[in-house]
Image 1 (cartoon, rainbow, N blue to C red):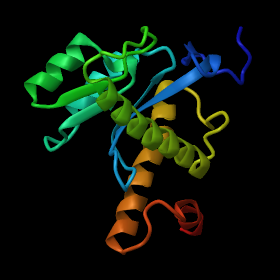
Image 2: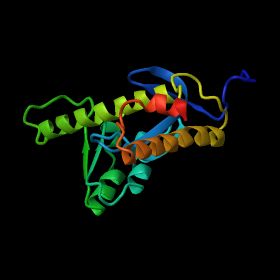
Image 3: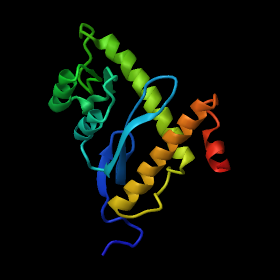
Image 4: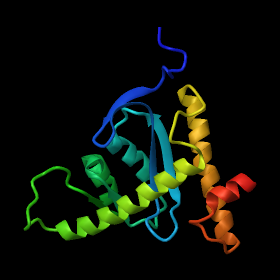
Length: 181
């Protein structure tokens, strides 16, 4: 019998950065620009395929989105086909392949990957800081955890929208604004 503090619906996964971990994974598609705002989000078990989830997120994106940026896990035939069908360009890093100087598009992918990494990593840290997401979530079970995490994403979107509409900085003071509310 598992310990009562363990969420038995969660799963194990292995990260190249963090090693083995147990829990849930938040998949986010967001704007790469001056304002970091999620356009689509899904919460899954930790072992869910990033490539499959990227396709689900991409189908939720507005038609105006022209570039879909991702790391090498997003380089799937299904996502490439979807982007081709919808007039989007999929730009992904090539993973751990041996680097070739004559690789066409290498420099373009490098620039877009740096932008994507900067935005998603900074947004992720800001989001975790705002909602105290560096530890265990206060919920158990997939449905309750989805409500909690995706509700936090929605609240984040509302805060950014409110701050934008009122001419406030949309990247600073958000945590204080949330606590004051």
